[in-house]
Picture (cartoon, rainbow, N blue to C red):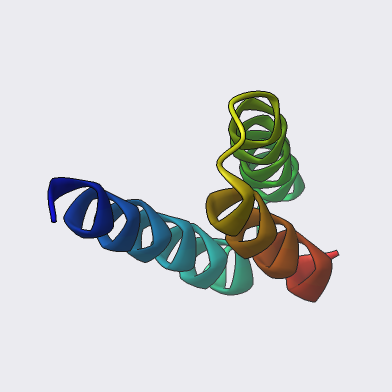
Length: 64
């Protein structure tokens, strides 16, 4: 149960990053957010957290 709760919390943070990206007019800020989404994707992929990797990649694809 704890893993599901943690997953939901992390996806919520990813969605907040997407909102911040969409609202930002600062290109450096947008680039930083993209890098952080990529970082989550790669770390999740390396640790066999496929659903988390998919969620971060999906958000990255939307903002890219």
